[in-house]
Amino acid sequence: MTDVVTMDGVIRIPTQLITDTIISAIEGGIYYWCRRAAVGSLDWLRVSLLEGDTGTTFELTAEVWPRVVSLMAAKAPHHYANMVGGRGDAVTADVLVQLACFGEIKYG
Figure 1 (tube, rainbow, N blue to C red):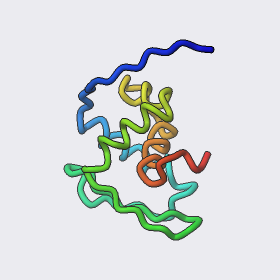
Figure 2: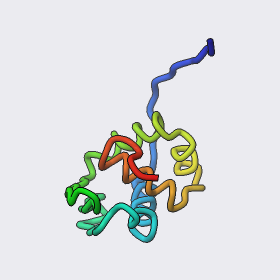
Figure 3: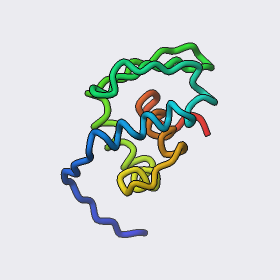
Figure 4: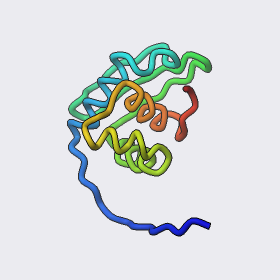
């Protein structure tokens, strides 16, 4: 049995970091599963995505990103650490957007 320590707290992540990660996803991290991505406003982190397999449209707004970043920390801690540490890449960006759309890593 592994002992663990559970901590609750607040981590402040600059909106620009999330914006940069979304841009990275749109520029090359999601198009193997996403048919179309349209940016409403990066100032407000509004993105519309169309999943290729199902044709489902996802409308992501500024309100979802704090929850998604927390979900990323819980479900994909390596990618979360890369993102907040400034080492994120297209895969990191793909994970963030998949978590926003599906609540899990569905592809890749």
